[in-house]
Length: 350
Image (cartoon, rainbow, N blue to C red; front, side, top):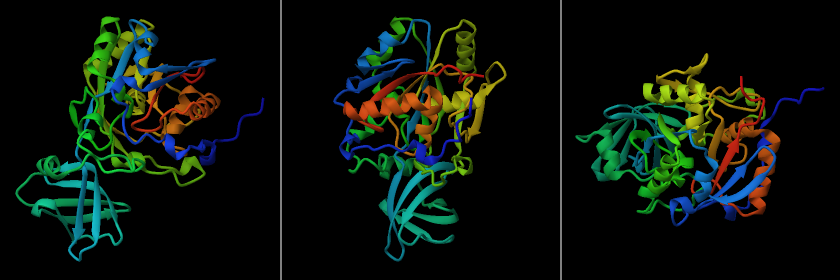
């Protein structure tokens, strides 16, 4: 049997009507739709049906990162407008930020911010700059007071007060993300309680989603793409829960691609290593999964690394069929959109 040629960027393109990009969340978290992508079938459901799809004894693993108010607006000393999006904090008053400006300031330049604060550019690396906040306020305090909720670029509106709650999971605990782990946005406290009552175990990892999550893939040759690095941590308790579920033959359900990347990045030998580390894992078709058996996720952008990841997990042809079905059935796409529950394709484990 001839082997399929290597996948290229154009293999992950699809047509999406603009009106299917969700600009606002569903009225209530669990009222979104859910497409169950089984091995041989597709089922149109609502997210409220999830407890009927997750079996007693299975382990649901969530990402408990907490989104920071990480978008800032300012101007150069010469007057040009500047927009900043936090990538990661590197000290009490220093951070790497993604910069949008018609004429980016050079190292040594200053950016004037709201509230009378200023930031000095220490160095540049492509679209990112390392800044030092000048003033008496710590960076965390400044972001809490003056930062905006960092809605993704495909949401064509400014953040509104309700976004502070809805662009955050109900189980967010560990401050550090600049984008939400969006598969978790569908859960409310009642849903989590129902799952626990039915015997589903819930554990958490932490992966702080960076601004690089929106970094486009520019090269047709996927082997040339370099993923942004993100910080993750897995507690000994979560590692033990995963080991126990695996030993008992109980499925591990990853809630979101960020959770999946943390689990697969930490996999070693027969288990998951506890501890903190950086990951730049780029998952494409052909990847051999070691940990996750099922994946709960939203719909992803064309030509994105996340679409490549779900294609690796559930199978390229199945994902193509699922996305075509979702477009026909008018599902809502991306961060505030609807969800999918994917069964892992057989033959993608090692």
